[in-house]
Image 1 (cartoon, rainbow, N blue to C red):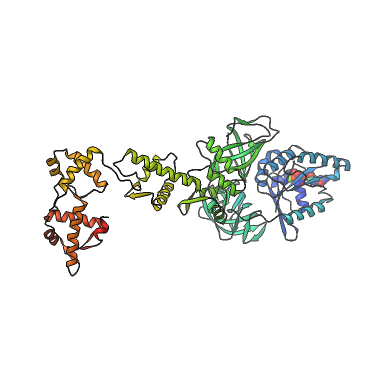
Image 2 (tube, rainbow, N blue to C red; image 1 turned 180 degrees about the horizontal axis):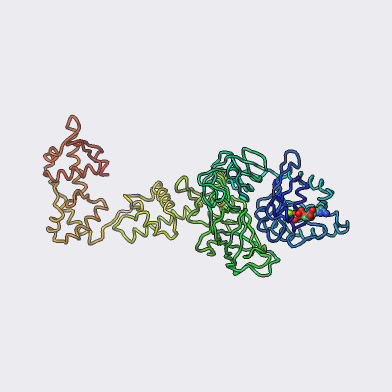
Length: 639
Ligand SMILES: Nc1nc2c(ncn2[C@@H]2O[C@H](COP(=O)(O)OP(=O)(O)O)[C@@H](O)[C@H]2O)c(=O)[nH]1
Ligand SMILES: [Mg+2]
């Protein structure tokens, strides 16, 4: 369990941690000199046997709320410290608001310095605290009056913390490993060490990780979990991780960076979130307000794009897009805090809905519907809603990344969904079954329209077909649709053309007339049809017109182009193939040469060679030196 202190400066947070753990967390010389906590302090203790607790002592000064925020984002339990003499003060209120926005619901109040006040005053402050906790997520947490100086009341608090630590259900190790880095230093002999709270997943010595957003690959040499040497570290622990990697140096690592499972590294500058404005804010949060965003241990500046309406009123929540000046690592559900531009005031906070927002169309009705789907719980319903809002399908890898699912979680979620998975196996696209059926119909409709408009042509290639569809879909999805329709016998593919089954390109009337006359000339007994130029002369048509017609009927497989200037009817080629087959059959080795073919067919040397080369191309014959062998039967080739 990780406990963080919270509360106004000088209310006794640091002394209380020392009373509980024996550790003085004010370690910086300046902190010692001034008696003020500036940065985060850390202490660990076995409050009860077997339950090791990590304390994060935060600074109370208003100037160091930024540091406080770096410490409290991943905690399990808040220890709100209020001095009995002062009572609640500004940072008591601000810290409590932050804890509430972060969704912290477990905690206790330490009502310190009771040695300085009367019992009546203690009772009075207690009531004030109760009112303050009011309708926050921490309402009703127990209050422990105590003195860190005399130790009165400290054992009762310690006892309570030990029980809370024991009762806290072990955090799930699910999700990809994510550690929010709050410190980085070097140790002689060890090298670079980063420390932070593990938000999800687990890590082991020897693992490969990625330093994010830098994208630097590192390896884990050693781990301290809750300040003890360990082989693994996992969610809910503070860890110090000794990392190595080429190009790694202390100067490269900053508070706010992440140490991540390589698959979880995907920094983003556009993050959609639902945020609530604190009721104490004097003005509504306007579109394009500059803010500080705190997420994990990071603090980045950026602007707020309000997605619904013109602004968010104090005390209200709304959808926003965070347009950040620097990329951060975020996943759905990550809690965040917003502070004003000059970093003096906490403005509000909330949770990430989509860490990968689109640059364009961030407030279109479709996008807002998609965001509403992303807000659904539990994950099974959310996935169903997301698929419903994505007729062209969604990248499942991207969803797993955005939702921080490890492979096992993702697979079990995908398996339960009513969707088809298409595309590359390692980069699948999920499409709701209903949308899939509609997309199949859309493809068939598009092909029908295509054929109606161009009765003399085969269907379009996939690229053009994709452009005919009313809905844009990825190329992989169309390929999968075509494959599905091929399997069902609804479409056929010839070369790159996709046509409806049963579509026979018909010739236009004028073409058909000319074709009748051309076909008559090609239909010869001697198996030596005239050349293209001869046909044009004989029929008195333009060479170009004839060539265009021949190209069209070739696509329709009514003729074959054997050479540039010579076309054959299929029937004539069948007869020539029979000649070749007979020659091969009659030879002991099953082979024949060009001369034998010329003599047997009587079509002359040049044409014989053209025809044989054409047969080679079809795979009917295969060349072996000067001879040829039948490779595939003609019946098969011409069918
Ligand atoms: N009398 C009394 N003084 C206390 C108590 N707790 C803290 N102090 C004193 O209050 C001052 C501020 O304490 P510190 O722990 O640094 O406060 P922080 O700013 O909240 O961390 C120090 O001088 C402490 O010795 C207490 O229970 N009783
Ligand atoms: Mg302090």
